[in-house]
Structure formats: C-alpha cells, structure tokens
Image 1 (cartoon, rainbow, N blue to C red):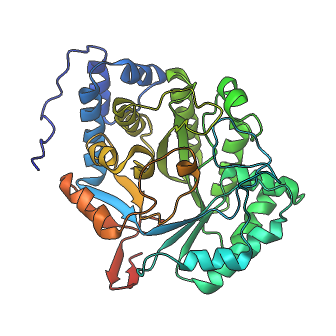
Image 2 (cartoon, helix red, strand yellow):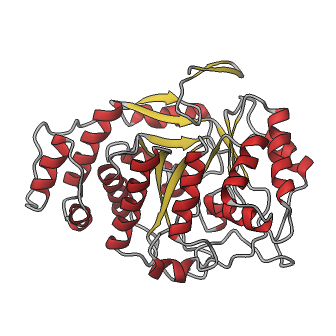
Length: 379
C-alpha cells in the first residue's frame, strides 16, 4: 500500500483556513471561531493535513494500542437516555446483573495473552450498593494484580456517591482504596444543556461531569474524555464541549486521551436519525486534534467507526485506536456491526498497513514488552 506523505506546504482554496494554518504551524491555540471554520470548510483534506501535522509533531509515526477487556457488570439503569440502547429498566426483559464470581470469571476469559487493562462501565443500578462495585474491583485486583483497572465514568462516580451518601471526594478516595487506577471518559456526551435535556436528561449535567472529573484528577487519578457526536448537536455545541475539556485540562492536566464517539442510533429512541458518514468521522478526529492542543492523545475507537475508518483516521490526527476489547456490549446493542474483539496481531497489521508503527501501551501509555503470554511495562 502506497502512503502519500503530507504536502510540505499547506494548500487549500478555502481562505478561512489560511490564518488557522499559520496558528497551527506556530503552535498557537485555536479559538472558538477557528473551530467553526474547521467544521464548515469544504476542504476536509486540508483540515486533515493540519491535524496530521500536529499528530506527527507529537508522535511521529507511532500509533498506540493496548490489550484490554471490557467488563459491563449490569445493564440495569435508572436513567432513560434517548441515546442509549444498552440500559434497561429494572424488571424488564433483557436485564442482567453479574454476580461477583461471574464478573471475576468473565475477566479471566478471552485470549490466552495477558491483558493490561480492565475497562469497567455499566448501568446506574437502583439497588446495588456501593460495596458491590468496590468488592468487584478488590476481587479483580486480588486475582489480576498486574492489570490496570479503569473503572466508572464520571456519571457512575456521581451516582454511587449519591446512592452511598458520600461526597464526590469521599467516593473517589474509596475507589482508589479498592484498587481503581483510572477512570474512563464516558457519559460526557455533549455538555450543552439544550442538547443534554433531550438526549440524557437523567444524567448529571455537563458542569457536574466537569466537576467530578476535576475531583478525580485532584486525587491523582487520570481519566479519558469523550464526546458523542452525530445526533442533534450542532457545530457550536461540539466546539463548546471541547473547549470546556481544554479548560479543565489547563487546570488539572489529568486527561490522557480524547475519544470522539460516533452516535449509533439503531435500537434507541433516536433511531430515526442517520448514522454519521466517513467524512463526519475523519473531520471530527481532525478537529479534535487541532482544538485540544493540551491533550496528548486522540483516539479513533475502531469499534465505533470500523477498523477501516480507524486506519484512515491515523492520517487525520488520531494516534491511538484503542485495544483488543474482547467483548463490547454498549455500542453493539446500539447496532455496531464491528467485531466484538480483535487480536493483537490484527491491530498491529492495521496500523502497519496505514504506514504507522504499532506501539503497545498500558493504560498510562507506558511501553509494554511481551514474551509469549507474559509482559513487562517500561515506566
């Protein structure tokens, strides 16, 4: 496969992009108005060229991935989010809640190669006590002491704190004591109140999500950050969302990775909406890379955009394509048709055929060196 390297000089007929290109080349921060121009430009290749310039400035040809496993302990949820096909009301058909032994056994299943991360998210269960989730984490740490536990979105942290009559700082400290190492970035959706009231009115609002992330970071834990796009939001909502993330990152430095998530409308109350196009997906990756100048990594989540689009995104600003995953429920319940998991060798092949160099990482982006089923992490 022939890889065409970026043109040495920026070229476009869209004059709105010329001053933006000068800012990018100089390493200057882009404004809200610059972000709108990037979304509204007809020259997506020029936008991608600028994003790739930043990507290669930061990471060269390296593309990060990890060997991870998703664990979704329950799909019972008190929320009624119109964007979700995963959550179920208590007592309705299709609900499940794993017993602790079942969850620990599920974590041990999968490939023979050792995972470096358990990614744990689930529904907001009305009856499960905080101790269930803390015992889940403690049991995983006892059985898999080398595996990093990335658990509980900001929405889950806030819900558990309220249910357990704890403050957010108390809840975060309890999570740390149980063995949680970092937090995933889900539940951010879109911060704009106008949108949030329609798609996820039962969740914490955008300001509460930011406040909870701040507490997580202040406690010394890292997290990711997501943005769900391709539903009823507009360009202004997306830029507002990313600038709020950028502002908190200036304050705490606690975000590791930004993950744009393409909305999958199937099996949701918003099923009448069209899916995102390939142009939507690669433009969002590129704009994210350009606006979020203080985020080290931009992830193209192959489960959401397909492995082929994830490959292309490696030329549009993305430097990470997530991991092996093994089993993923949330987006597949919403109609994702991608494989449930992918072997490490296949991820490496996808990256190399895109002209990039695979870099196996742990959750904190340390290098992982493998020997058959064992591994060491360079810190």
